[in-house]
Length: 366
Image (cartoon, rainbow, N blue to C red):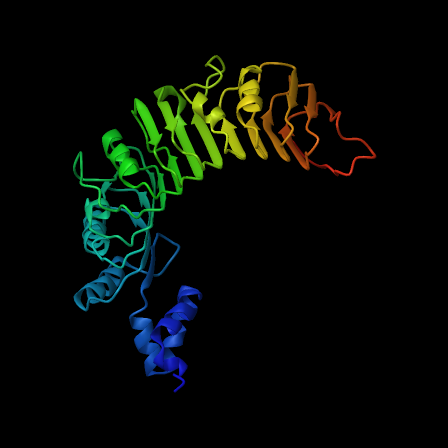
């Protein structure tokens, strides 16, 4: 017997999840079955932001109380919220604990703007015995004097061992907590740590055989050392250092091991590049490099000469006006992108009119 659409709530949930919040809500008028499906959809998205939505804290509170009271599954939880006072902070903290302990939860996304209070995530997000949780993304922007803390204790128990993706931006997390998290979650595939490792002596990324993407943004003045090892499938590495100073070393933290992660095909560096030492390490240590993006704000020399047999995409960004000569010896190069105040002379010696490779040039002058 063929089941009718209205007898398959999973399919109705799937359709509703692909619609906007307003469009999905309108499906509730189609029939009683659609109304029931709408009231039990396992994907929750809440936007409580000043001037951007009509949703209020009490609306979110009412919905979550119903879900928790009736034990309705929550597979994905998305919350974008402005914290304007301690009351709203306490209410949001109260929501997250029970949601984090839901054994069906697979994705957790939290984006917070802190205007009137600090915020602390309950330990349940890491300590809950949830083997289905595969993605944690927490982002924060804040006024001076406020902060978003990842945990309430210094060393919470880490039980989210099925985690595949971890994204922290503007989040205060202890050095030991992060290292416990990374060492416990050996299935991690993507890691982004953006302005979340303040005061770290060492950032350790080790023994992650499935990791293929690593993005880091640090305050250059913190002098954080990077220990990177046993990541055989690392494909993409990006490093941004804020508050750069022109007389810092070529790589202002111990990231030399990155240039010997032979699996890398994509590299993005917004660091101090003063001479050819960094480029020589890239050429010698990354035999399969396909894409390279360099921010050249602190390039001290008048020329930039680079040779790479494998590279297909090269981007030189924020170049200073003192750079007057660029030579790129790369027979497979397909795209060259340049941004800076003035356009230097360009030479691609391996590419000529009879070459089967056609090079795309993109320039942004400002």
